[in-house]
Image (cartoon, rainbow, N blue to C red; front, top):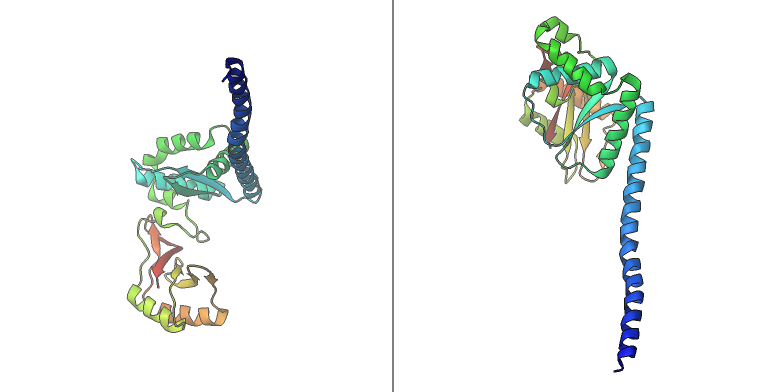
Length: 240
């Protein structure tokens, strides 16, 4: 083959192939980038909406180990009591949308309460925590809030085997499997029930729910969770 002809083919091949490979590479890359941008933008928008609705969240990301769990508990309770900010733990894997949501929410909190709000508040609590009396700690609690398990010093309790048997009698399906949530108030009385099935949410009828709540309160000896020795609203999850 003629050397000039070979060089022409090689030159044409390089230019055309380079354009083609660049085009083929950029299509999925551009699509992926656009997806990340769109997802992030949706998360930012959701954070802004939640903030406007006063549904403010402080997201703790990654695997967390506290040197002083009691102090961290008080910090979370203080955030909730004084600023209506709820702490949520995201776990080890933090997705792009969660990161965008958290960054936006934290920025909005700093705008409202001052730069480095969380850091400054934590330092303030760190400096004063050991001086707090039990009565002062109790001021961060109220009877309206449903407290998460991580904040409870004493977990709620009841006769679980009896509860499961009563649930299965009341919800009569040939095949039934569910996560049951039982809500107990500060007076050690069950005040609500919810069932979450694998594929759908099952809501009790008001009559069915009230009958079962009365039966459970009479027979399963419910005890609410406690914080600083005070009974608070809490919940138990059971596999039915």
